[in-house]
Length: 182
View 1 (tube, rainbow, N blue to C red):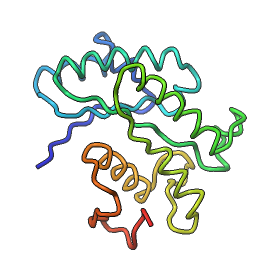
View 2 (cartoon, one colour):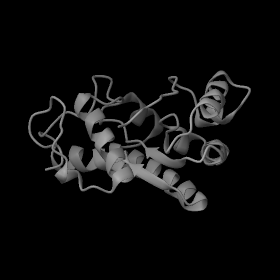
View 3 (spheres, helix red, strand yellow):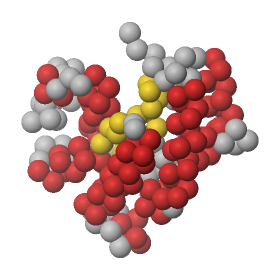
């Protein structure tokens, strides 16, 4: 049995979620007072590890203190590079691959410092996007957010990080046809 809570707001940073004075930070604090969690999945705004690594690292440090005080295990959700053609890539002088690897490096650095695990969703995206581009479209029309298939792949990556079950052993695939991990 799994119970899931979500405290998210578009464009908000992990720093804000760790800040007890911020509207999202207040929601985080209230959730931790009300519920004892097993795992807390932490994701920052998708470009923060590249745009402002110091703020990203400080935010992760601060929120991890709260997660651990709750008795939960923090897991970082490493996001993906935008799809080729995204205005963000052009504006930042990045490619899908370079953005993905810069994000992975940022998440890896803070994870190693804090001794926490990372669900490398971005690397899963890159694997499928690069090696099986006709398998499925992982991106929504905005070239940034995940499609249904991309959301499934993200969930599968997080599930695998928590359970250590080989994703090829997972038979549930929602309404997808075929096997996204092939």
